[in-house]
Length: 128
Image (cartoon, rainbow, N blue to C red):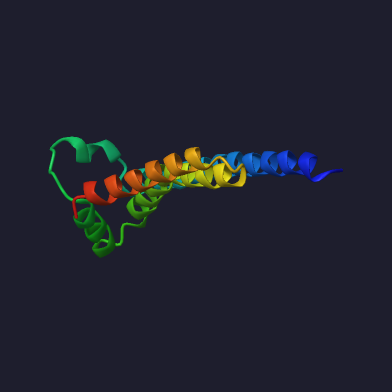
């Protein structure tokens, strides 16, 4: 087999790994969310009762409250949401790496630009 035939196979394997990573990440995040929500349901009995009144609260206050109250179910749900939200960002990063391996540098630059914009928007948009 020549190098020309092995390169597309390697890129195809990388694309397969990316899709497997995303599938596994979604399943992992879904499992964390499901376990956290069931755990909350078992602990409190009525999970929707907290939605009767709206109290705006920053993410850091919510996490601090969950840590103080030792609410592991809520922390698990938060972690599941974090995993779920970061998967598309990781996908963009992996796509940039894939474009570099394909020697398509214009698309790689665009993918990395999108990655940095996503990271900046998440870090600037979090109300700590």
